[in-house]
Amino acid sequence: MNDFPTLSITPSVAPWSQTKTADPTIRSSFDAGYVQTRARFTRVPITWSISYQGGNSLPLADKLTLEAHENAVNCGAAIFSWTNPMDGVTYQVRYGKTPIVFTPLYNKLFWTATFTLEQV
Image (cartoon, rainbow, N blue to C red; front, side, top):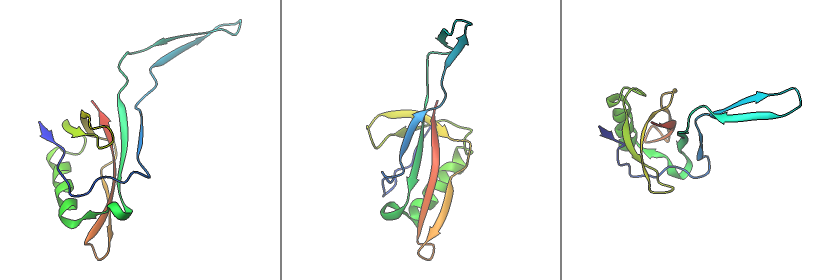
């Protein structure tokens, strides 16, 4: 199993987001106005939106490392270990449905990168 590469920059905090991948609740409405609920499944995975931008833009070497990792795991096909920089917990994840978006800055010496990671 691959590990997420070690980069020289940490992700930007400002656009960071973390959410549940899906709501597992099944709701059944009744004529009297009551609603019965139950969980469709008990495990609720997490999705993270990661961004390297502004003062946390990637140097070209980090961009190439991240791009090579994305290719090594075939975008979202393979699972890899990733340590969340916000809480220090290691998760088993895959890249989200959209490939990493790289945007060049400063004559292609620095790059922004945005992507999602989904807990497996």
